[in-house]
Length: 282
Image (cartoon, rainbow, N blue to C red; front, side, top):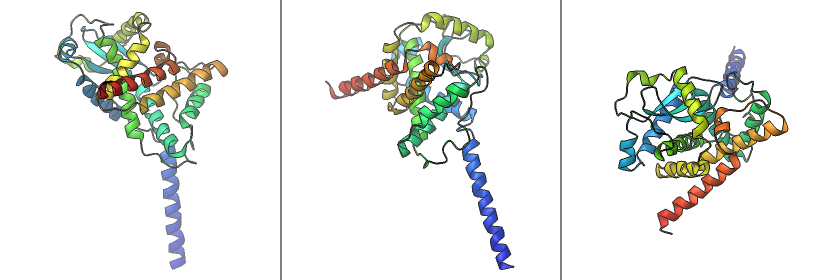
């Protein structure tokens, strides 16, 4: 009887471990609502870096979430009431989350999980379909990383700070900014999205490198380091390579609106140097 009980307990433990492994492979890194809350928290921190006149001019600035699960994008825009808004798609939030997790594994293992995930998407992602998670077993041969939360917040701060730089610099002027948050602002409509994308055609060919530099400096002033932003640039650099070498059809809107990832990475590093020099009085 004791031998049977021992075998039964062993089987239960084995089953539990198998389920845990499968859950680790298949469970989304973070749920959408939690990611939205983290993004909103980063915007609040970034707004705290604005001087008073800019804070007044951008009164009522808020984050809107575009429900697309297939196209990673981030936009500076005006909503249909004429308020300032930064738009993030759910696919962008999901991508930042996956890249942050991959980066934490890379730091723990000396691996290239970020590039591996970009290569996987470049060769497997079908445009218009829900963004693919890493394939089963993606992390199984590596020890778990511990920096995902930090890298996630760093990357979100840079992505949002970069769009905030456009608004602070006056690249886009909204007609009726108000500090009053309307209930309808919680829903980003298809009509608002179309108008924002039309405006992006003239907004994003502007001073791209300068906006990246300012966006990174704002993130640094908000207490975030540059590592998460550089991890995101690693992802987009590899995805760009996949488009050239393997003729990948997957091209996120975010990638088309911004300069080459290598140029952006240089701007991020320059911002770090500039911020350190300012702090030391050089």
